[in-house]
Structure formats: C-alpha cells, structure tokens
Length: 191
Image (tube, rainbow, N blue to C red):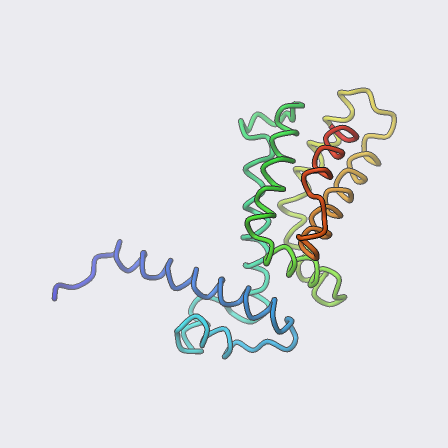
C-alpha cells in the first residue's frame, strides 16, 4: 500500500469533520446542548473522543460551527450576483430558496431555534452569527430605502422576524404549518 497523498489526507479530514458536525447536530437536537457529551458525539461519528479535539476545541466550538455552517447555507441565496444591491427578483429568490432549504434541513433549524432561546447559548451563537447576518440586514435596509419606505430599518427587522417565525413554526410542526402559503404572504407583504 502506497502512502496517502496530501489530497487523500485532506479528503479524509473533510469527511471526518462532516461526520462530527452531523453527529453533533443529531446529539444536540435529541439530547439538548447541556445534556449532550462529546463522547456521545464521538460514538455517533464513529471516531474516538480524543480525535474530536483535533477538529474542535470544545463542545461550544462544535456548536458554533454547526450553527455557522447551517446559516451559511442560506447566505449564497442573498444577492446571488454579489453586486451588493438586492433586487426584487433576488429577494424573492432568497425567500424561496431559503425556505426550501429549511424544508430540506428541518432538524438543523429546530435545533437552531431551540438553542437560540437558551440564555447562555444565545450569546455564544449570536456573536458569531452577527458577523454573517449584519451585512445582509444592511443590504435589506438599503432595499427598503430604495423603495421609499418610511422606516426601512424597522421594516427590515420586521421582515427578518417574520421569516424567522415562518422557519421556527415549520421546524416545530412541519405537518401542520403551511409554509408555502406563508412564503406567498411574506413575498406579498415584504418584497
């Protein structure tokens, strides 16, 4: 057997990191962050507990990565041409694609909202999230300014809260929550 190439090592490292993130999401979602242990994550990922610490410094670090990875799946849908200007079509695209992504990864969003409501965890998560979400919020404020809205900041915050509400309600009860109807209403009212 020949020695592994740097590319093979990188591929193995990437697969193990993904396995740890998936296992962490599963364990945190099913047991809660405070009740979960890194040992349980390691067992589910099929690796030793010590190996996790080659990838993540702590349970908190693992949680932050899970949350950032999940939120970052939505960022490319916002201003897809990356010109710094949000158009009506791009806003509709963002709403449609992000809510479709929520349907595909409901477990993550259920965990995201459950954890974001826990006092100590909310601070841990939100400090990192703001680095990614603030530029999007500023672009949304500019979108509403360009439309001539009287309170673009207030409208942007309300639109964000409404979208969070759709996501949270769907994540909590996908069989009962009419996500497609909510998507249409959001587009009518906020786009």
